[in-house]
Amino acid sequence: MASTSGSSPAERVAAVIVHFRTPEETVRAAAAVAQTAPGADLLVVDNASGDGIARRLAAAVPGARVVEELVNRGYGAGCNRGARETSRRAPCIRRCSSARGWSPA
Image (cartoon, rainbow, N blue to C red):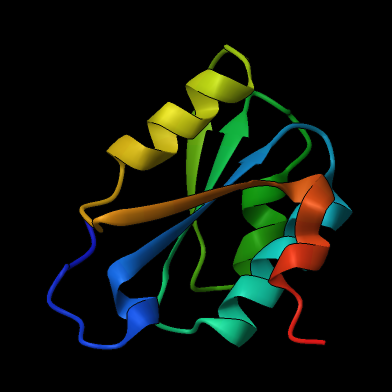
């Protein structure tokens, strides 16, 4: 689990992205988080997508952690899993289809 001792706002937040078969959008969203909030605990919950998102993220956004679900239990369960995987006090949860909200532009 990530530390909660950071002093910057980004170091106190977890960015949780719930992923299911939208690899380009997920990589784009994760990259935007890494760029705009480099101290954030960046988690991607893979809802049993089977599309190799962990490999893609390792190459494109090495700071992202991927939590792999064996079964797609839905968006809400993915959100809850992501929130449980971090010790940060403020999880920010987004669908990867709404990546524009992470953009620095």
